[in-house]
Image (cartoon, rainbow, N blue to C red; front, side, top):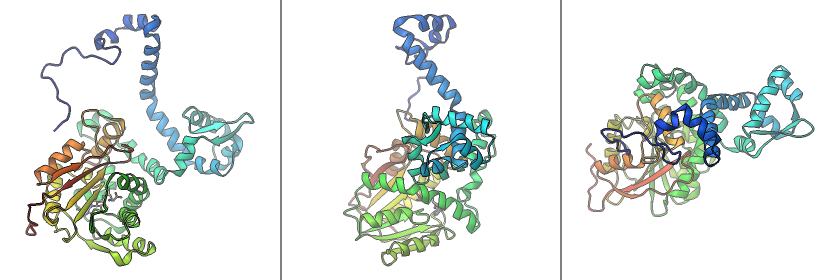
Length: 385
Ligand SMILES: C[S@@+](CC[C@H](N)C(=O)[O-])C[C@H]1O[C@@H](n2cnc3c(N)ncnc32)[C@H](O)[C@@H]1O
């Protein structure tokens, strides 16, 4: 299923460079001419810079990773420091940390003042302030190793490490510590996801929400704060769901939060909610698993009941960097799931019987996109799946 129709016989490919044929642009003679011609000079330079940025992107990521590993953003948030001070604190030779710091300046993450002290830039400060971002950057060491041989990766010849980081994707048993590791990572990044989801979707007319694959309850906590009258039910695997209890107690929500354990693959999901949320759940799973899960959600909802989906998605007809060049690769490395477009998820929802209500314009597509669907009013609730 793709949102990009492909012609059977591709014509001479066109590029963005004023619509000239790609083969012409690729010729060395044309490049030399265009780089000197006043009307094309700037365009050629911009394209060259963009290409070089792509080429060097993996170094940029590793500069970011090194900054986070050395806690440099947190250290600079406390006070400006010289290279010498940072070298000692991070146990890195001065001449080497200077290279890292200059690289970070070039990437706009830190600033070097005239007195040779380093401070955080706005972007660097955001790096500290965005919940879960540093944890996600550190976690990328796994994906980075999985992508080390991209040809093998895309051919499907790599035994990826990410697949074992998310053990539930293969439906196997797992240790409590393993569940804790991935649940922590999810909970840390949930704040932004919940923020954007709650801005995009309206739960005002819902009475009871069931959060399927709700992890350690981070989304339900935010939802419960935003809607104090809502009843909340969390459903997740037996090693995961109980970890939400302390969170609900700390938030003073235990009385209106119920926790149910089970697998949506093998067990029924709880009944009685008029709203179901699937937050960052579908992209972990195959079309067949998603189709079966959506059918269970449809069966569990009353007529008029709504299903709210929120997760990073592909750009559809307009592939974007977050969805198509990051999340799609991440889920490919996980091996069982895939990042889908709004169109693809809508098709799966329609096949389960839902009608599409809305797909609000995403606030930050690199955080999440949302879709709201409804069980048609005339439909009966079926419990015998
Ligand atoms: C990517 S995490 C998202 C957690 C949470 N919704 C969030 O956005 O932070 C996917 C969640 O689905 C749960 N999950 C995976 N397979 C499941 C299954 N078969 N039944 C129930 N929950 C499952 C995982 O335990 C995990 O908590």
